[in-house]
Length: 329
Image (cartoon, rainbow, N blue to C red; front, side):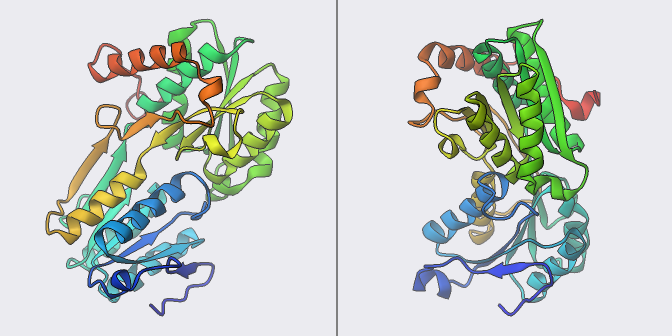
């Protein structure tokens, strides 16, 4: 592709098939600071592209590690080379998508976690508070101390939305439960600081917390290490992270960025791309929780039944989950 940017790694997936390399449809994926291997948010977006390569025969390039200030130039480079679709991963890319979409009306863009109103942009948004409510319920049911924790990555409204939903779910199950919350930081570096996240998690465990929901990108790995060290529990986010520390991760709140990215590519390739906002929640499987061989032993059938009842109540409107975006508290 020939795009070289300071502070960024530009790569093609290894092992691409000849058909994929020859495919006329080209997509670009601009990851945030957590990078492709964060086992969480970015990894999900990358998996969506891999699926599109595998099933649709597309060709794609991805960029990881770009500084926030370089994102606009990164996207411009893809647009100038007439990539058919450019996907930005993360709210920090909102302004870059807005500017490039206006400058390159013939290129389609998709943006995860933020909205841009333009005729060539699809905004992919998720009902994170709904899934987080279920995680709070899981934590409250599993807790033996009556204290649960939350470790967020960057202190921004999006992660406050996770926190607020989590608190509501925990208190729905146990009104007197104590929820202790901390954030890794206030800059993009908070998504990739496992040592700081581990420090925060250990501090919470020392205060009597026995379950922590981590919504911190690659920093989640620090929380998982703390859970293993203390032989207590954590909850993953975005991707299925149960496998990272089997027996220590109660479940993961799935945020199906992979599905949203795959569908955007499929629609763009098939001439069915529509701009505007697409929302994904519990109702359509856009958010959910994970149950597999790695957590089955610590997630009993009665807990699954309780969580599924709550899920059904949210979907049909019997339970209305508070949304930080609306309440700001």
